[in-house]
Length: 218
Image (cartoon, rainbow, N blue to C red):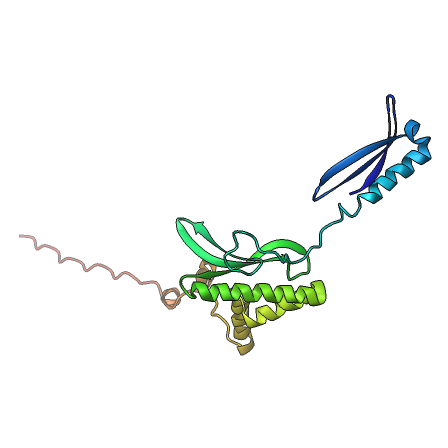
């Protein structure tokens, strides 16, 4: 950010102009003595900044039109890469976008994996379709166009999250509900049939033991 700062330290008295950006940083001191006073020193510092304003102007935040040297697709912003997890290699074509579905600036890629469900050519075609559609939406209506593009893309190619959400919503609409799972406390509270029967039984009475006949005296 450009700035003009007052310096009064030791034998230094003047205004320092500072400016920086993507191309670097520059600064220059305009002393009161050399410029003929405080006002002239400040005016000289501001004029110096204005001369360099165009050089440090922020770059346009949007799609890049050039193709990098390592690009293998021929479409700007589309490249092939791979991801390794637990020794498993997953290959994909990716389409870069710098403005997300919420209209905010970002640096992300939409990945289209291939090898199981689709071929490399199919994944590449999807990545190029995504990238060209995103660029066209941005150039036509800016961030609003990008938001609309992401909504239309999700309708055309729903993600796993969207598909799962639709299935859950469909079950609720049809009135089907999952059976309730009884917990251990519920099982204890509700006695089984065998427990009920044992609760209503009368206590068993013991029969008196039979008396042995008395032995005859001789």
